[in-house]
Length: 354
Image (cartoon, rainbow, N blue to C red; front, side):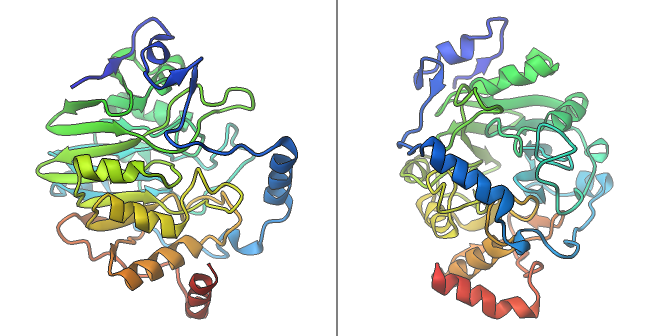
């Protein structure tokens, strides 16, 4: 097993990565970059031509979860807290993916995409966290305020290469940070973790693109196998991951914020289904939806499409309320909490049109 611990040489992670090239990380499959005018058009549409239903008109139902409930929960329980933030109890300890508890997915809290709902639990009420897992450095996945509030109760922060340096710059103790390259792994507290490839990009500003790595993650614990996609476009890497580490009991796959204008860095629901099949998944938990307005589709469309597609192909999809406990052994949390009767026909029309 191999991993990179942070040290005082800020370039160590980049220098030791076999996939880095002149400090820029590369995708396993090429991502097409649009021209300046095309990018400007996309941004204009995003800010000024959005449909009205990209945000819910009413309140999203949330099931509050307490610290006591979490502490008494059995192993292999999952709690979706919003967007790509999932709390898992594995081998008697808690693991948290891409913690995002702030009101906005933005470098500032007075502007930018605003949450649809409050988190089911606040950070100070969370139990001790064995490990926080980061997929990449975008603002909706790496939130400074959330990270800093978690420092005191988190034993380890596991990141792709370069992202750990951001955490240390913020004030996270270097001894808590572990940086892994693709296909590197380590074991912590009886959980075997692997950083695996993804097809995406990174950058927290206009001029620093792809200077840190992005990754998906594999969790192996108590005979169970869990996959967390982070953000990724569809690519043949899912098949390679499935062949090497599958079959997976649960796949937590990005299903939201997709668009025809950026098809290679986010998966459409049809591609999330294929990724689940490639990973040899048993249960599919769609994530990256239901919390922020990050695309042009209606806020409920990812749920409508993934459920309809899953039903058509006989795939078990799990769609819990935010905060609702899900057991790996009893994944029956599939009620259509996002739906009202007026949208039943619309859901079928969406599937037929796309």
